Every structure is written in C-alpha cells, then in structure tokens.
Length: 119
Image 1 (cartoon, rainbow, N blue to C red):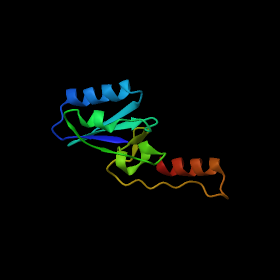
Image 2 (image 1 turned 90 degrees about the vertical axis):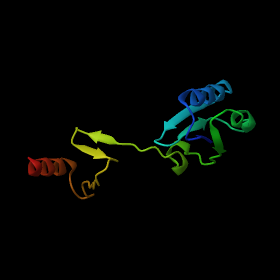
Image 3 (image 1 turned 180 degrees about the vertical axis):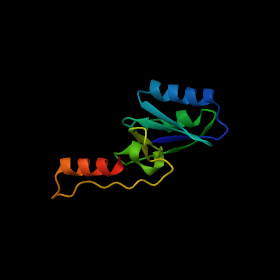
Image 4 (image 1 turned 45 degrees about the vertical axis):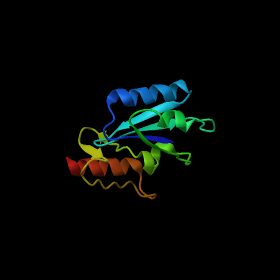
C-alpha cells in the first residue's frame, strides 16, 4: 500500500508516520517528490490499521496496491537512471536505443565491430 502525504507535510510528520508503520512491523520505502511524498508500505497488510495512520497530521490518503510487484508499479513509480561507463544514461532525459547481437552473430564479433567503429 501507499501512504500519500499532503504537499504541506513536514519532514518530521513524514518520519513520524514511517516510525509508526515500522513499529507496526512493516518496512517503509519513502519516495520524496517535488510536490508530494509517498511512503510505500511493504509487508502483509491483512491486519494493517489504516485508521491509526490516517490520524497522523500530514497524511492525505492511503492507496492499497494489490499487485505483487509493488515497487515497480505505476503507483510507486520512482525514476531510475542507470549510468554505463559515465557515457550513457539509461532512464535519463535523452532517448537511448539499444540493440544486441543477432542470434546468428558471435558475441565477440559484435563487441569488436561496435568498439572499433566508435574509436
């Protein structure tokens, strides 16, 4: 599930909510956005008391996520950027097109051809 904090929520309010959730036996995954902060709650939610969390100042709403891949879901989308050799950023601002060796090519031939053309 996701705990959505109000845009005006302070860092202290966010930390209080995280501490309460962790005291309840769950792991938290906070995501600090430009406008709002959301806290991903990880663990079995069958006995999760949403009323306790909604009572905290700064909590806007609680959104259940039923998908097994919570951290990769659109509800918890966190932008990831992977740097390769300090030259290429995958997930950054620029479009990256990747291609690999064909099933009939030899892996070593691909790397030799690619890097020789680049040099």
